[in-house]
Image (cartoon, rainbow, N blue to C red; front, side):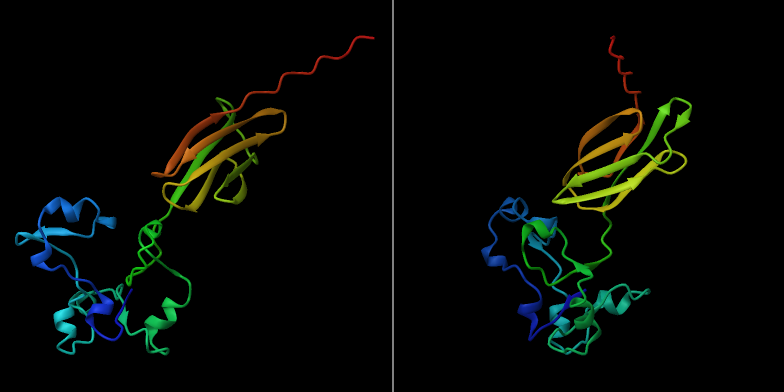
Length: 201
């Protein structure tokens, strides 16, 4: 989703050839890896600024998209489709941790997940086991299905979490994980709690 506001330089950015000296000067610090190397200088998407200057209504990619997955418009128009979607809170920035305040945002960016399967023995699934996820100031709890499976979806990338598995009569287990990629904890085999010894009179 890309907005166009009051001219090309507010809606996109460009690279001046005269200021480029070394390739690594641009590529190493470039967040999001948005720069490409071509024609002996770095280059990036400009949202077809040269066409917008010629009063085109939208960049070529938006015009050519066969599924309508791309949207371009004017945020100064409160009635435009883009403005309404932009203000809906449903759009996300790519790599928000860089805090770049980008003028291009995305809808339904895939998230990370943490999943696993809980067993009471090699042949017995732990149905209805309690699994708790904590981290990032949040706490979520799910119950395993009849196959002992559980899953937490919609997690941010590179975040730290703790997963705790509990089942009556069995010793709980905890796992510290980080969502650099999707995390599958595999088969989690719980152990019975040791029986308490009765006190002799």
